[in-house]
Image 1: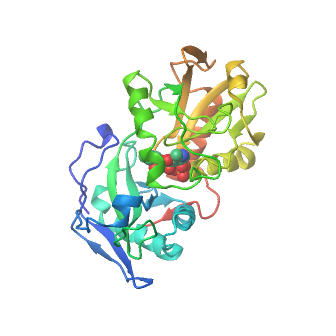
Image 2 (image 1 turned 30 degrees about the horizontal axis):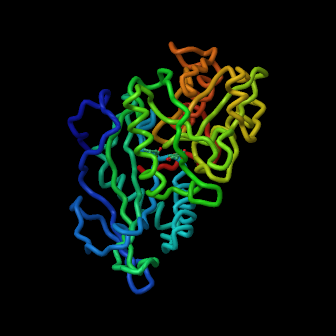
Length: 343
Ligand code: PLP
Ligand code: COI
């Protein structure tokens, strides 16, 4: 198969239309059999539930080429399961998890020419999305939905790849206790956009959101979980019911404990601890972000500088990054089932 003629090494994190997408519609209480289609657009009613009451959930995973030239993706079963949790929280019908994984395989195969070659640093971002197409005018769940998966080749989420970034402590809240922060609902991102635009305007790469109840604890950024390393070398991971259970973070915790023999502490992390200099390294993790080191956090004008600095990723984050990406690319043996071969 001939690859598309793209400048693979210089892709940004941008959408471009690829050849095929998978679509299944839900009507009369059941999902139809689904199919690959060419049309990247859709026509929906002006009264579709998604437009008014924001019934929309999504996922993100990556397919990529391994060193031995297979196309694989990383733990798609975890995305399938999380999408069911998200759907349930928004009163949407779950898309069957086995069908989710098969649909990912089908779309990636159909777009194999768009999967970046090994060694380019790029990957094929896979975006499953589900939304209410049924008409609603009173506030209630719709009775028709569409599940769709499209793909687009991407480069690094943050410009500069694994160069340290500077983030700010946001003045806005992302997720309320007992709200929807723990699911991947589009509404969580809509409400983060204003804060993100302000952060970008001020020169920051992202926002760190604090817990909405007390504004004292680190939660996560708009699109990634947070990792920290304390002065004893422990990996410290903020714990909260209102952050997204990142598949990357859960994989890193597993790798740190079981592969690297590190001590991992999952607990509430207070901003005062970070302010006090209790941590030597900090980073973001997620499918899009992979592991992006944080060099500085700006807390309302006060700069919190990590010892790892602004030049390069710190030694612990680097070890985690190398091990995780090594497992993803097949250089290091990953736990069974993590690397899912597609072709
Ligand atoms: N947190 C938020 C808010 C996200 O949008 C994402 C991205 O998916 C993550 C964390 C990272 O999750 P994952 O590692 O499953 O991609
Ligand atoms: C991801 O990492 O897949 C995300 O969804 C984060 C962002 C692009 C929304």
